[in-house]
Amino acid sequence: MKKKDKSTEEAILQVARKAFTQKGLSGARMQDIADEAGINKALVHYYFETKEKLFALIFEQEFGKFFSNLALVISSEIPLFEKIEQMVKLDIERLSQFPDLPLFVLNEVSHNPARMVKRLKQMGVKDMLGSFQKQIDGEIKNGTIKSIRAEQLLINIQSLSIFPFIAKPMIKNVFQINEKDFQEMIEVRKKEVSLFIIDALKINDKI
Amino acid sequence: MKKKDKSTEEAILQVARKAFTQKGLSGARMQDIADEAGINKALVHYYFETKEKLFALIFEQEFGKFFSNLALVISSEIPLFEKIEQMVKLDIERLSQFPDLPLFVLNEVSHNPARMVKRLKQMGVKDMLGSFQKQIDGEIKNGTIKSIRAEQLLINIQSLSIFPFIAKPMIKNVFQINEKDFQEMIEVRKKEVSLFIIDALKINDKI
DNA sequence: AATAAATTTAACCAAATGGTTAAAAAACTT
DNA sequence: AAGTTTTTTAACCATTTGGTTAAATTTATT
Image (cartoon, rainbow over all chains, first blue to last red):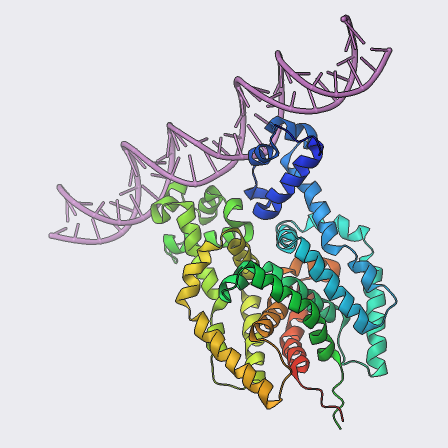
């Protein structure tokens, strides 16, 4: 039986997303996608032609999610520390919703860097970086924060936000915690990571 | 023609490692492994029986590398800040040698968490964590560092060290840098990440 | 209701893939 | 040198897999 509340196309996309994010391009099976969507395999091809095209579609969507709103926050006109707080919060909340996202995106970008190039150009990455660099250089000159390159800071922010989701099964095993504990740990991070970063940046004006 | 400087078995392992780390379990092909090792496919099975067994072997080796010496440093009897420095240096130097390591290990752990469980027990992870927690709690009581949980600090250290390697192709594209630039950036991180962490921990004794 | 268009399916197909087998070749023993 | 064991290969095999086709069914259109 088929649920008609969602169109067939949507149903396929939803199932394919799950399959690809969990098993990757080579690990996912068209037959499984069809089965799980409750339809014939030929129908998947009817809507999306090839596995590669279906995958490319999913990848584009997920790649978009991966960067969603980040550019907006980075190039917004708010104070640096506030901006860091917002970036961390945004990242962690987004990833709490889509925990498989970063491993999937980074994995596929590694296997096929070309796939990302087009999409990156579409988003205004270059401008974004320029304005952020300026803000940081300003703060450094003001003596508000220690000297650091914008790229390094950006990488630090993203590392601290994203990595725990990539390493989730490892973390759960190493620290012997269950899903609930993990989510609590993430909640703690949502508050503490931005403080951690800000503390690392602040000038320690000992007298 | 075959190079006999390395035994066939070793040659297979070497080629298989490359294949699996780059393409994953489902993406790698036994035929490709045989071809690249310059031998017949049946010979791969002669030495390692099945793809799964060959993969498991490679995974164990790489998983070992992933944690190599970390336990030693964590449970060593040196001051906290020095320990952090050593951990970061160890991590980044190891990953500079094996850049594909973290994505491969974390990816496969995600796809099949069971694979890691045995190996984790072999290493003394539990004791390691206990002693580290004590050291940190000591420093907190001493007023040397801000309050933080050992797990969170450990995750922060690993995030900052490992993530850039996982995101390498993304970073190279976003920041428009080539391989050499990337390696220079990593060199900078080897020095700055530990300072970043230590600064984040230090109490800011403003008067 | 009749017709046309879109959707869905069952049955196939060719290529790829992990794995096997039996024989040849190489290395080792005596 | 003859015999034994180990290593290596060519040729297969069964299954899986992405993809196709032609017919059936459902959904518009008139």
